[in-house]
Image (cartoon, rainbow over the protein chains, first blue to last red):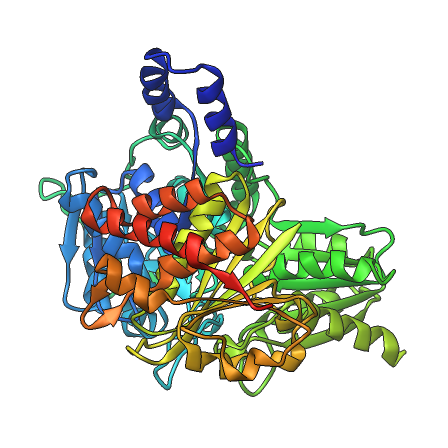
Length: 406
Length: 188
């Protein structure tokens, strides 16, 4: 039951005592509050709680309510943040790269074609390890449209960014706060994308428990630069080095991802211990893995949709389990293989395509299955491109077809 | 238990905002809720819909409501009844229409629960007109609460306050909800 009810009941049980109001105010500073908000508003709330010092954003479609909400917060004086209203997404990323190198915590947000237009500098931030946090509201790419799928973020899976995919508005908020701590960890020090499905999360209202500022401050200390540009001690960052310099940089990025693979669960655990809910896993498992006839693997909201499929199919006495990848970069190979080894069949659902081959998730999982000689019946399905609806019943049909085929 | 509701409207009538307010009312009642707008590049007057889920448990599904499972259809403009796939609806599905009289296509129906309220008349009476369009969504929510009692009337009024803040607009909306609550009628 949501906590608003218990607060209401608590207030009623205390009657009309004038102390109630004061007590409510004190509690609101310390206790989490449950609010109804869209995924975009959840991102903005998380960003506000994380105290970025510089936000740069371009406000026109396909931009979302994320930056509109944040600009309102800055304008009302609720955030101590330099908000730069730039003239394009390319400039937005340029501005946060500069601000980050000048020693500040940075944030921007984008979506679909905006991410493409930002593209060159997305790679710049990835390859030169700029610890910026950027939610991407996942939408289909060209021709211009606004419908949800994962094609935009998948186009940047190789760009040197950590990528999270959230399943609901609560996870959007929790992961966005964690993203700052992960990006800024000195052994990781790289940019983080928090991906949330367009409309399905960004525009849909649902309940979100919001931690207090004090508790977020205790989890996320102020930005501590690893290196920063300083006129008194000049150095260049990333410009026109020789081949050895680029090679060294690429190797350091690979090391950074290896560190991230180890450190992300630790940071998620710290968040869970201090703030709650989230859990420290890279892959969420829902259902009984030992009994499952088929495992369903998906990213983002399709993962939570598949959780409903597990319940739906159990009523028909079909046993399934969901492996939802919460993080796609770094790719959680080890965890994945240890899970897949325990099921007889695997259905991988992609909401994007590497045209000329298959869904990106399916391609990468097949590579791991081959490398580890895992004996599993492998199935793949592309669903929900361009915002086509995918219900738990649609996923159930796919599972039933697999079981019927044999 | 989970209740799934579809609000059918034309762009500009307040259907999407109505979905948010209904979800907020459920939230105040301690339920788990979702308000899902299905809209693209929005156009005034174009048919659109928004879905609401009100549940006793956390809602895992993110897809739009499945027609066969829909508990209620709230129709903000009578001509939009023709967009409802009537044959697919489960018995006793509720359809509430903003209309002076029960629409012809529903008159002979015996499978569904049909209700109506003249929301246009109430909107005019309460001064709820924006850019020449009667704002009927809160009125229809008042009718829905009367028909189902699935959220409390007090919570719906609180949701209106939350949406529009204190002031004349909220007062007019609350009055319109009360009128809808008393004027709503089921087809015999």
